[in-house]
Length: 245
Image (cartoon, rainbow, N blue to C red; front, side, top):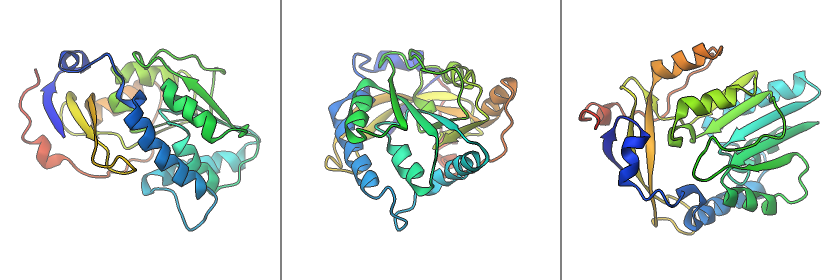
């Protein structure tokens, strides 16, 4: 559920409990753990394909893997290696590294779940500032972000930080974007799966990003969009939006 229309995240923050980070809370971690364990157990099972929205990432990863001797991936907001387990297990990879930036609790869980996997490396970001993280290497072949950019306090600064890694491909999945002016709202999150399904997890600021503004920013940073696929449309809901506060 979404509540309120704000010009930016700073305008929404007074209406939130900023002392906690939803993605570092126990209810979120337990839910993500359940999903990741299930995916990990079927990691190499051809009867359990990756999600439809991950197929483009899978194709890009396969292309890079077969055209290079060494492939490096930076997954911003990759949780405890959920995306990694869903996609990487579907293709044979040699000499690849997969670095994940997420909250400290997600990173700790990922290290436990994938103990001994030399391809994985977890980087804990400051829960209060998603721009505060230190990368172990300056560049990556692929940067990907799945359902995370809209939760950044400043999505443009985050994109600039990640494109600073000079990736050949920048993959955005499950991004809230469309023809409306960019605005921030407050999202009330209820767990939709796992052992705590139906439980209220908390509120977080969430930004719907204007598609042309997104394209223009990537163009400014030297990137062309070569594949653009719509998922669910919020067109009817967005027509009813009041002016932002």
